[in-house]
Structures are given as structure tokens and as C-alpha cells.
Amino acid sequence: MKKILITGGPVHAHLDTVKIITNRFRGGLMCQLAEALTDYDVEITYLCAPSVGAQTPQPTDRIKNHKIRVVTHQGFDDYRHKVLELAPSMDGVILGAAVANLVPVSPWQGKFPSHEYRPGEVIPIDFRIAWRVINEVKKVAPKTHLFGFKLLDHANHEELIAAAYGIVLEAQTTAVFANDTDDLQQKFAVTKERGVHPLKQD
Image: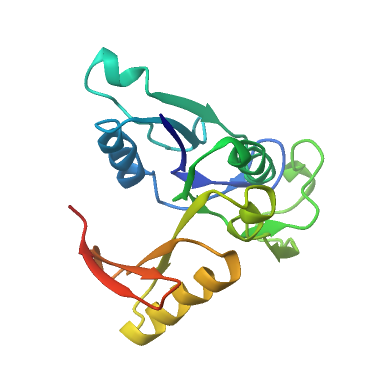
């Protein structure tokens, strides 16, 4: 039986112990993928956040339920750690989570003391671009088949394919599935051989 790691839903960054930065994606399509793959001889580990609106796979019968193990993370740092910890034991890794790639450089320790500030006062917060977890997977799991996703907003076709192919080369993926917010149902599987394969969502 093959083992597959799938990540889905939002991956948040912490501003303080109670406030987070996240995005509007909930992981519904990745849940559908995990559920569909249970029709095959695979064992799936599904990694997602326990809250912030994340969806989890809902297998349709008891037999399938044994083939999906849900593991949760507590934000970007924990997500990164768990992906790299789990990847070496997997035959395939599918990174479909929507990562908040703007991470505060120095999150507040404890809760932000808003009572010490006046309404309208500007609070400067330094952010860094988060480490790209997909680029680290092959370093710990060189034999796994790695798949990623790239979403752009109102980009032309050439720009979209070029962005996906850049990830293929840098992360050494088997393929990257690219699409644009203009048409979320139309995807393109971009491979290391420079193949571009149009795929509809279904």
C-alpha cells in the first residue's frame, strides 16, 4: 500500500498568541482529492489546521475512513516541521495547503496590549517572506514523488506556466498544478519535461 501525504486548507502565521494572519481558502478541493484517492490502494495522511475554517476529509464509509489519518498543525512553523518530519516515510507528497507567506519577524510574546494604544495609532510590523516548504521536501525525502500547486491572480497563460515551471525546477517536483483566479476550474499540470497538460477540475 502506497503512503501519501496531502496538505490542505490555510496555514496561518501568528501575530501574537491569539491573533493570526491567514487567507480565505478552506481546503475543500484538497479534501475532495483525499477522499477520491481512497478508492485506490493508498494510505493517506492529511495535514491541516484544527481551526481557522479548515475543512477535513469526510470519507463516505467505514472502510475508507481507516485509510485517512488527519494530522493538525498550529501554524506555519509547525506545518513546516510536520511536512518535513512526515515526508521521508511517504511515497508521494501533495502540498496543496494555502500558506500565509507573509510571516511576522517578531510576533508579540503573549497577547498584543491594545489597551496601551489609542484608536487610529499606527503599529509598524515587520514581515518576512516565509520559507518555501516545497523546496525543502526533496532534501529529506529524495525518492518521494512531490506535487505542488501554483495560483496566480489575473495572469496571462505564459506567466502562469513560467511560474509553475520555476517551482518544478527549484523544488524538483514531479509536477506542479497551475491555475488562475479567473478560472479556478481550469488547471495545467506542468512537468519537468516542460509538458503542459490542460486539466479540468473534475
